[in-house]
Image: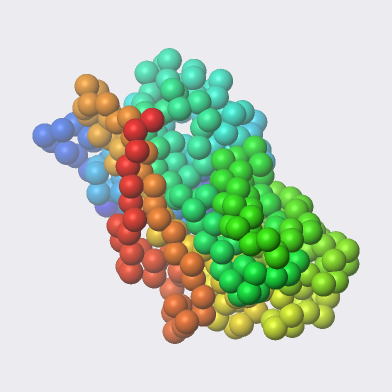
Amino acid sequence: MKKGFVLIMVAVLILSTSAIAFAEDGAADMQVYWIGKTLNNPWWISVADFAEQESDALGVNLTIAIPQEEVDLERQISMIEAAIESGAKALVISAASSDGVAPAIKAAKEAGLKIVNFDTRITDKTLVDAFVGGDDEAGAYKAGKYICEQLNGEGEVAIITGLLEQSTGVDRRAGFLRAVSEYPGIKVVAEQGAEWSSDKAFDVMTNILTAHPDLKAVFACNDQMAVGMVNAAEAAGKKSEDLILVGYDGILDAVNMILEDRMDALVSLPNLDEGAMGVKLAVALVQNPDYHFDREILYDCTLVTNGLIEGLTDQTIYEFAAERFPLRGITEKGY
């Protein structure tokens, strides 16, 4: 099927897909609205593409909206309002703010939309019909465990956090600190936020290195920040053997840094399809209103080092993970 695209560069990306008829189940008449978080992270472009492919396969009308800036809660709220006004039957959304989107989500639910939450949680689970995403706390725990083991349980470490109004930021911070707490000889000497931004992480990392010359390791809670972290370390004259540097997500720039021995590891979730899974759940909920999807689907995570991805320069870690661990570690829990 041929897809149509509309791109509004200043503030929002809109992707529209025409429908393939599902004669027996009426999917061709279904409008689903899909809202991501930021155009500044390539991960979101890939996730949106997977969601679009799923809509093609199911034959639904899909509108994808993504704000330019991850911190633009106002823009995301306006997108939710647009979803309501469009007559969509379902909304698939990753929250710009776990609490801040609640009033708009409540309005969407009261308007009759099915709500599928993915990636970053909406705090009030009573507003959500289903959730799908990565187990971020467990993933960050693996990152922290890796760092502590590499340091043999001794040394100064730091963490660069994301947005703590988002569940992803909260959970990744918590998982890392839980791991570190198991090693009395490891001391967290710095914790600073960089709002998922590479540029801000560069400045944060520069400040941390200046304040803590004996620093042995840093965990950045996403790969956009990890790229800034690595660049700052190199600008400060640090060599790969001086610092253990770990990221989270698996964007191509970070993967290449590992392959080039500029970064030690990252945590990757085989979850590029979580946006696509959100579309599947949305369609199922609309077509089967009496079936109650009171569940969450959590994707397990993988600690990725050079040895695991060597030779994969022509594909992102997302694609690799999807092939190697297509359904690895999925668990379901009732709300």
